[in-house]
Image (cartoon, rainbow, N blue to C red; front, side, top):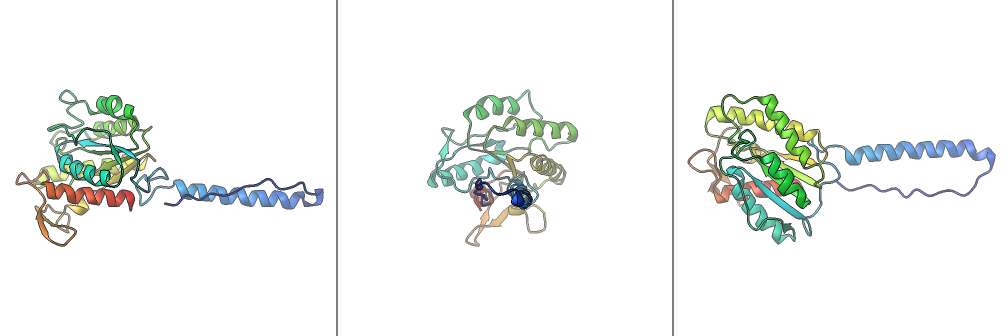
Length: 250
């Protein structure tokens, strides 16, 4: 979105008979400025994408991680962003296998992000998690609070791209993932520094169902998901990475 700037100047002194006209001029300008500011910072497409969204990658620092579904996306995204002149804050792409927001005893994402990620002050944070959280017995209210805490811990970061979970082969997990994606989207919409990017639209069979094979940018069919019905192949991760970067940089 293009920022709108107004050059406001101080007019020269006017005679008393013009003071009423001056009042209406300033009132009109104030209304226009308020309207323009409201337009600039309003969310895009229902997600909380404010004017903090970068227009290009060159010179930006970035960090990307999540659970194991995020890995090949991060690998491809790192390569693409470096080619565009962005600067990774990690030695190599990373992820925490088997982790989730619910398994704090196994890996505490909230503490890790607050102490190890936010402290580096990256320009962009890419985060993707939830596959291991999509199990029976999940408390959706408690999970919503956890998601909000993670997002709030990144409030000082210029821009956060929260990538949703993709379609899942196992029906039970797929149903819970749909709920989690709804939470991610809703919580992001309440925070101007967070942009939710849907992964279902680029991983489904065209009707919202699971697809192991997908068409790449050249229209060729690729094996996008592993046989476990959950993880991405390197080609599938690259497909998702391109989708995320297209959403971010339009």
